[in-house]
Image (cartoon, rainbow, N blue to C red):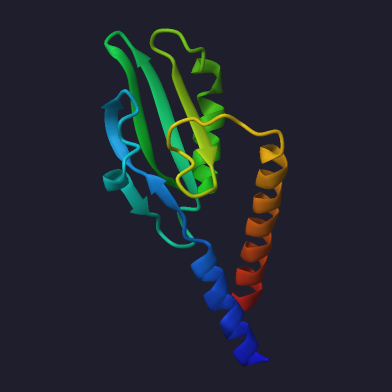
Amino acid sequence: MIKMKMHVCVWVSVALQIQCYQCEDVRQDDCSLPEFIVNCTINVQDMCQKEVLVMEDGIHYRKSCASSGACLIASSGYQQFCTGKLNSVCITCCNTALCNGPRHKRRAASHACSVCRYASLLLCLMLLYFCSH
């Protein structure tokens, strides 16, 4: 039984690493290139974050790894400033590999898939909790 628990915990920790784009104050979304891809900290940074700032000289981007708690708090805190107008700031969070890259056309089933991924993440976190106790 203990051996099985150990294997499950190792699998969970490997499964929780995500890759994101990471850059500071870049214009024209050009940090969505391979050299900007980073491996996020396992079991800590489980989401990708993207900030879009509309400034006088154009649109600026910041992209990074983030913990789900910090990212969701930041995105909801800035929601009132996400107008798309001058000096607006929009922060989005996502939990799939390189999801903070350039925007792609959405498919109808993408919402259902993200719900499944979130449920899988929750299950993995629960397994990790039980493995540590």
